[in-house]
Amino acid sequence: MKKKLNKIIIIGLAIVMVTFIFYKKITDNNPYNDFKNISINESLNQKDKSYYLYYYMKDCYYCNLIKEDMFNFAKKHKNIYFVDIDKYKNQRIKYDW
Image (cartoon, rainbow, N blue to C red; front, side, top):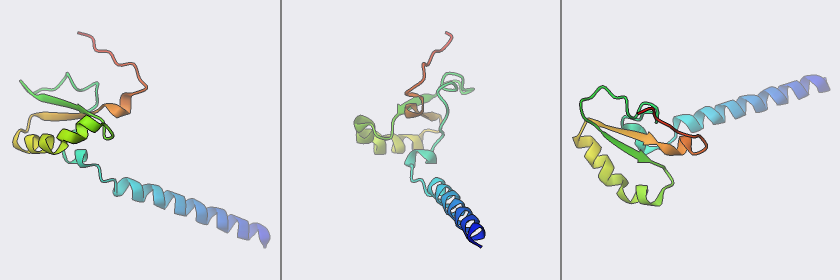
């Protein structure tokens, strides 16, 4: 009986943890997700003849100062791509020119 209760508790905790993780992913209020986000490797390989790239970090003080201006600009110009460089801070990035 005690083993069965332990299994139920473990399964219950696992369900709660998985539900919490999915909830956090669904409710992530990242305003940058409303725009075209690309990876840093895609940043110089777009098919548009000309386009803008905006490299940002969510916790960057200066990025947050101009964030609303960038969003307004992006709403008016469809050829702007956002790159979250925070995802790449521990990687060495190179581009073959």
